[in-house]
Image 1 (cartoon, rainbow, N blue to C red):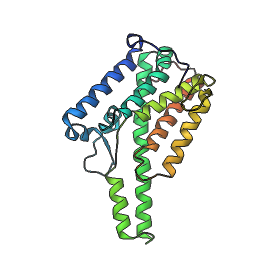
Image 2 (image 1 turned 45 degrees about the horizontal axis):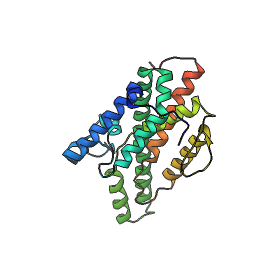
Image 3 (image 1 turned 120 degrees about the vertical axis):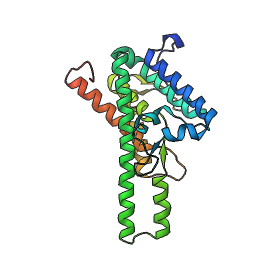
Image 4 (image 1 turned 180 degrees about the vertical axis):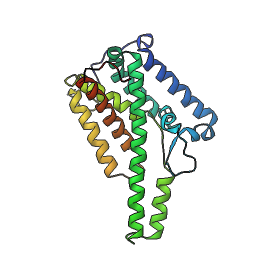
Length: 232
């Protein structure tokens, strides 16, 4: 994907470079120490007994220990879309933006689960579903966890699309360039569809992606509307 310039590792902006290093080290620790290490750091449903407030941040530094592709895709996307944004904004503002998008993604995911939980309870109380289905679906909601930097990275992608809307990018397997604004709209629509129509075994926190995208857009829109140079 991209006509974004390839840089050596030493030329990567400092925040992105450190985020890549931290995420890689945490992934190695996940492989080394197992779920006892990363389980308490994953984002749990707020009614789960293992939910802790720090998970709203810690989850975004975890990735699927069973596949390095999850980590590679997120870090590659962060580098591709974030390098130019960090260079433009400065490291401090970029880091604050990234963390706020990740936090917004976590809260959106928890909010979506809470809505699903309440709808399930109402359906059960109205006797629209059987007790067995209620227990199975309720257990799936309560025991669900979210990990990954995708929500924060989605915010960075939106910032790039907002700042450089007509930048032409290549996305495999599409054989022609697509403007950044259309690519981002496509990603958002795919996540919206995936969140509304979840498939069994999908294992993608679509609403976390949407939350990161929405928060990223609001931050960039507000900054540009009021000509602010910082988020603090």
